[in-house]
Length: 328
Image (cartoon, rainbow, N blue to C red; front, side, top):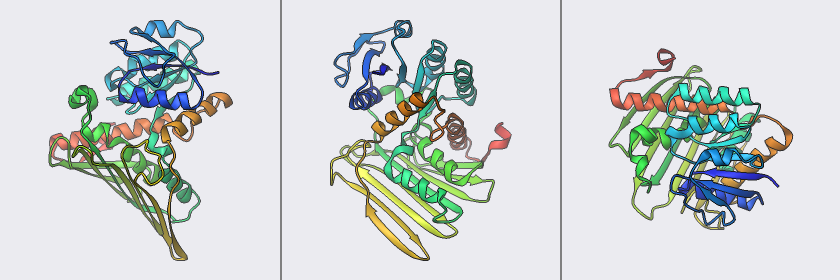
């Protein structure tokens, strides 16, 4: 049985714990400064120091769900101690820190995966498979949106800790744009307020264009909503998801629709409800079992998504378009 240690007892700690428990893993530790327990890991020992976790040779995986400024230290220490690491996004708050984490993984020969869980949502998986199969030709444009209620953790509202909404929330969508459109070269972002709506345009080396709408101020009780629209040379894809939360899997819990249209016809379907966090954790376990890098969710992609998100944040502050080559 794979043994897990979870760092962080906030909302993502709960989410990771539920996923690991669903897969039958042994959660041996929950580590947080307060020593808080997680209901989803009733058998776990609660500790306050990472050193205690890393000293236990039985721990196989460290699942890092702590505020982003801690990611470099905790990931590097965990990898150096011989642990595999599932690291919540964003990978870090600077490209330098992100590259240091990547280098630590390469030096350790352990597996690191950044938890860009959106890649494991059924609709996003379907879109990726359709594009890779050439069903809509070359993608010319991608439009994404992500709408959430206000986060309930205070540290999130400090841009020095979270990067703000355009980094912490928008990074999922920048990752998707990069996946479908290639190499980003310029980023322009503007906002109505700190929580949005934030509109970001990303120009790509190929001439493709991506846009992202980020909003973190939905009224309490409003559904978590995300969507992706791809326009290709041979057709288009529309995906819409709206539910009580990103892990809602009850039949009829919300909207989970996928449409593909080409010159030969169109199709529309309601997708099966799948817990993407469980799917993500299962994929990570497969990588450990097969001793393979997580090619479906590579670290380099997480670094690139961060670079775009930081450029968007810089554009918000300056009011100008940011050229990524000039930031390199």
